[in-house]
Image 1 (cartoon, rainbow, N blue to C red):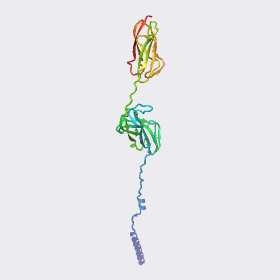
Image 2 (image 1 turned 90 degrees about the horizontal axis):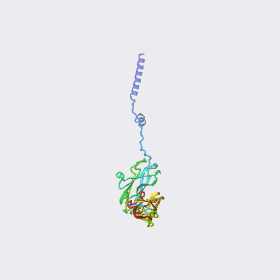
Image 3 (image 1 turned 90 degrees about the vertical axis):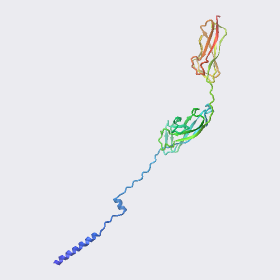
Image 4 (image 1 turned 60 degrees about the horizontal axis):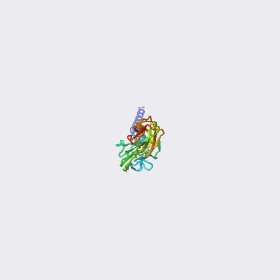
Length: 309
């Protein structure tokens, strides 16, 4: 009986020993598998933030031309002569990615001799009408007016044109809006203008020459334009006035143009006469309603003898 118990104990101890050895030989090795590592320590990949290009128009001054091509600082504007100065035209191109709508009142600026950052006093703004410029499209517009001898003195100048000077149109680039060309203005003196019209009384007489108190005569005044240009005589214009006698004449009822060198006759009948010898003075344009060269040469005098009969 004792032997049986001892044998059972020995078998149990042996089994426990084997189990312990097997347990002691098990190793826990951390896994190096990338899948497991990523599952244990996941890495979130952030995509690169790409620069988003703005979709906007971009206006440039593609080219500049002037009219006339050979400007001068003199001459007289007419159908055959442009006169002094020049006009500036610019071709504006939209090289952006969106269409540009240029509303009425959108301005271009033209400057002479210096860049826009320095020469603000010589700006010559011009407003356009409604213009739509799709991407890649160009259009020529008037950019500046230097049509006078004062604005275009003789010499060689750099003429600048700037599109969108007020930044009224939103663009992707504002740094490329300027362009310049060289312009030479010839020295041609302006032709002297003809002297303006000038009224005088070229002659003064009575007819018949023998005048009586009965008033059997007329006083005749010839008004002449001795100036270089025509004079416009308004309607109901007081043409002549007597300073020493009463008359019922001297009113120009209808308007007319009195050309240079042309004359017009006025006949007057003096009233309330007295016998004797008198000096009558006649003045043309006594109210100075007519624009003429001189108002100091408008009078003329005549000596008249009034006989009893």
